[in-house]
Image 1: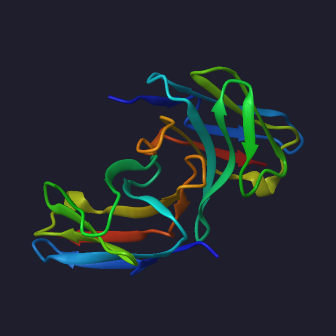
Image 2: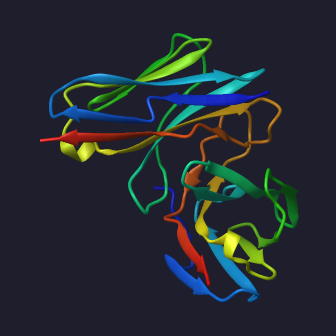
Length: 111
Length: 114
């Protein structure tokens, strides 16, 4: 069965304390892995797409990496404005654009 | 910038009412999607459309229908709203094609059914 699991469910960091969020997946035929950021009461905002193992992408304090089994979202020296829920999703070659989402990791960064 | 808009941010309806949620995208995307998001259950796909007048059921289509008469517009219809359809509804769109699967989301509609 296709599955996407994110850990931890919730993460509290002090401002400046770097950490990583994990997204592990079991799907046959990965087309792409997507990271989104979602603020409370709003729609998810696209961050990154990763297509193949070994690929990395960066945006400000965020860096996403991909292996054959999992993806990490590394947050370097986070700020309070990085507080949000981070969603991971995978797309299969056979799925006509559909995404399979994980449950998300809610990050809180305290000043 | 990709822009996906939804007709209402908040909506309150009565049980049994017919409810229309509308989504419009301005990027000429072929694919459009409707999700609902509930605490502990994540995002679940209700319906999607890969072309005008084409639709496919997602994981939880029961109690919903959709309409896509124009490429830019995708409507979700609750034929007879029930309290268990109280949720956050999210619309998304994406380009078709092998390497263009990124979905862009609207701001969401928080629907409460009383």
